[in-house]
Length: 226
Ligand SMILES: [Cu+2]
Image 1: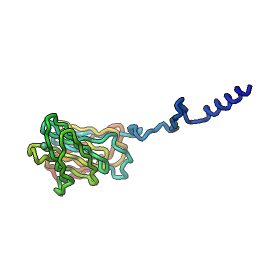
Image 2: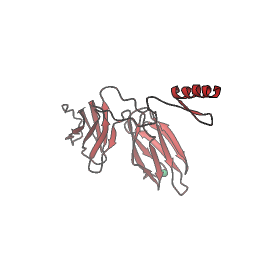
Image 3: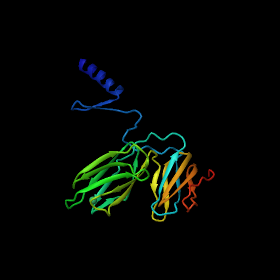
Image 4: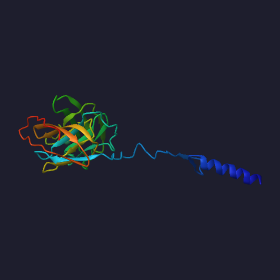
């Protein structure tokens, strides 16, 4: 009888407890919200896809909110690799204030140095040498386009796009681009198309916002909200 009473009390405790006790004595704390910092952020119900056609292949398209930036960590750390005496990818997108990994996975022992400069100011961010199998992590504190070169192999070149906005894509070879999961609101779109820069006000509405980019002369254009 006494044993039954103890068992009843113990079982009641387990029912009301939010902890799952394991036989090894460890336990998992249940998060009643079901959210996890490592899970990707779900799109809001009013999120839109913003798409259009940039005037040049491999254009960089950035949507900057007029209001506050979303508090969203990047889902993964971007990696710029060096292999076969090439940078890969040749255009990499990174978030301001979060790390970027630079790696050297050349199969033949090959030293590379990585010289990174701001494309506008020419200010050098860093210049390091990475042996085969090594890597280097760096966090950029300022938005911008950065040139990535290797002084040992002058033919090596890549571009790094550092943005405080998460809404950034590189267009395909035909200039077509699509930015997904963009909350509704007003934005400034900046398109880096070769040596041209186009700026445009965009009013994003779900489910899809088409953006026309008519300027081909490179002069900044401000057009009415769509
Ligand atoms: Cu190199």
